Image (cartoon, rainbow, N blue to C red; front, side):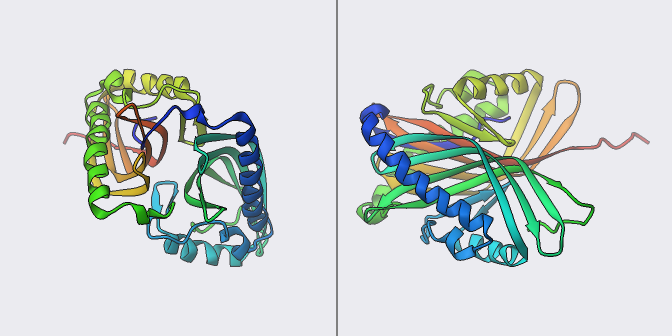
Length: 310
């Protein structure tokens, strides 16, 4: 709905991975995804968590909330203890190759959670993304998230529930932050003013581009068209930053995770509160320019009721 997630990296053309290598990598990553899914379906917490990398750089996003590895572990373990099983349906999936050791996996899915007390919950649609990195010859999930709509299937209430960065010095990381931050703020500032062309300019118009939000997975055309409809109805909006985190893949690939709130004023007089609001941007550096190859938005949008004039 709002253009806002940025992933950045500096590299050669994205098609440098041969078709033969892509098929091999797909099979390897699919096996890891299958392990995660089986662990979720069997309510086997250790199996489901096994492929995720326990690292300070790890980030997982669920419907507007940013979690560290420890947050995810502490939050999901009690849920798994209450689960009888889950049914995961993968409707479609896509692999985007940043290089031979870094791959974005995105899937349109549907989940049914069956709890031991007899109630069930449907997560549909559920857009799921995972950034995989090959570390010590093993594919690890180093960054991920999901955006879904929850629908109870019973009347019972449902309680809510990197690559090795040793080669990058702190000075290297500061340089990457300094060079990508202006691109991030270009997106924010032009989103606030309603300048669609300038807001989407940093996003890569390529078959590799993926945008995830509101349970949908979109290509560049779908992403821009969806934002055009929104911008046409928009008068202005204002974002307030609460947190900004970076995950460093290498000196050509950086993930920026922005967390904050927003207020949108529509031309018809409506006002929308966007809180919480989390955006993930994957930056890649191409020909000396930082471009966003992947974006994911997770937010809660509610109308602001106007008070009657007394």
